[in-house]
Image 1 (tube, one colour):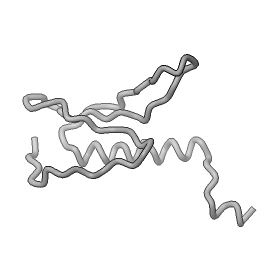
Image 2: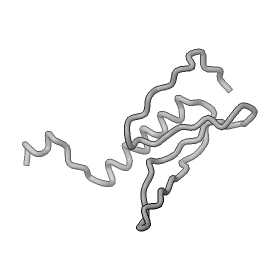
Image 3: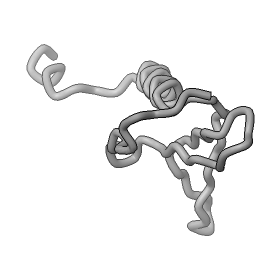
Image 4: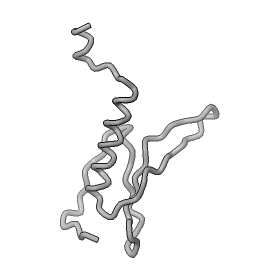
Length: 84
């Protein structure tokens, strides 16, 4: 496991998900979670995406997850409004 010299982490944007440190002595101590979704009873549902041994690797994985989810949704960008 790599020791990170700078204890400050990158701040996550809103509705991006989270990375949690589960403690020393684990093989893969960083857990990645997807953004929260809600069911019909307004109960929060959190999906675990996986575990890694490096914080920055987990951050890159979350970036890939969001890139794939945006491609699936086919979101409309502000610049696309003017080209329609």
